[in-house]
Length: 170
Image (tube, rainbow, N blue to C red; front, top):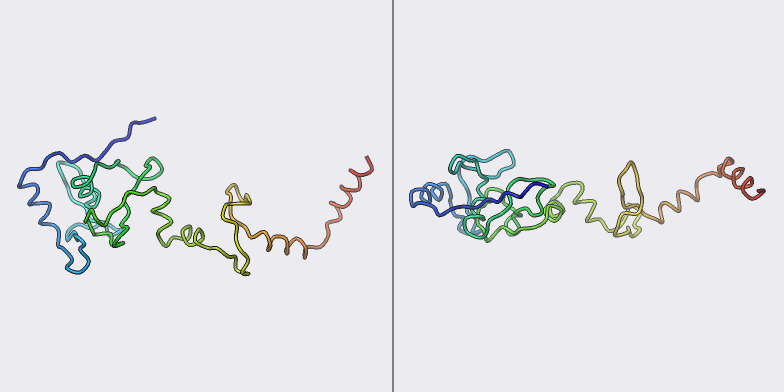
């Protein structure tokens, strides 16, 4: 198991602070610290700091609040979520919250998040809260009442009846 590397910001010189904060504007109504340069394809700001490219919201959180783990994906236990403003270029540490990757994903609008928020099936029946059926190697939530209705409409299967009769005869 590899050791987790943390984003730790050492004490900064005045010129470094001036360079970093010159890249932000402050939203008057929202309180967001918006980075004005170099946005990635997801809308998050980034800049170079001492030879490394850093995401601006992660950098500001590590600088002003607490060191955070580097990297992304399944290796990380926590991620930074824009819990207050939901604005990717915002770097205000008061708008950020450390959450698990699952919490961060479920707060979004992805298909997985949408399905996780559903409480009823398309026929209005209550869905179970936990996965109850395996399908294609993954556990999924299926409506039990709809499954029962499908089974009731399905014509009898002669081979099953014959198999059952054989088992009874033994």
